[in-house]
Length: 93
Image (tube, rainbow, N blue to C red; front, side, top):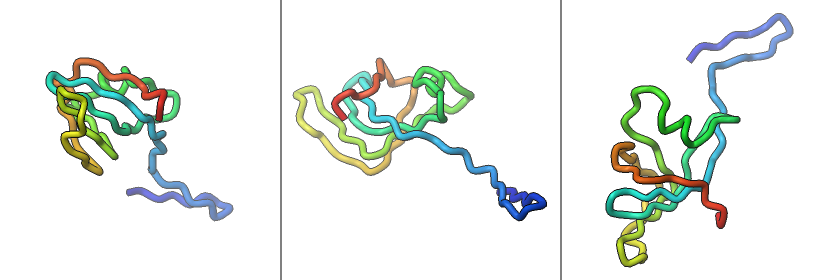
């Protein structure tokens, strides 16, 4: 991490701020309720199409099986973007 200090003593770092967005994600087999992180003014679509990253980070994830029951919970999981059928903001969160 680089740190820069200006003439007045203010410290600048290369930390990037991201907003937490509650989402519902449909994969080939499951429905996932959790949170993803986007840069300010970035759309979910932008995150999915950005760069060569194959995975997307999901926090506070609840994975629902085909019957709608919670199959498992995880504080963090990585999801292969190739398995995403659709993703949308979760208005109920």
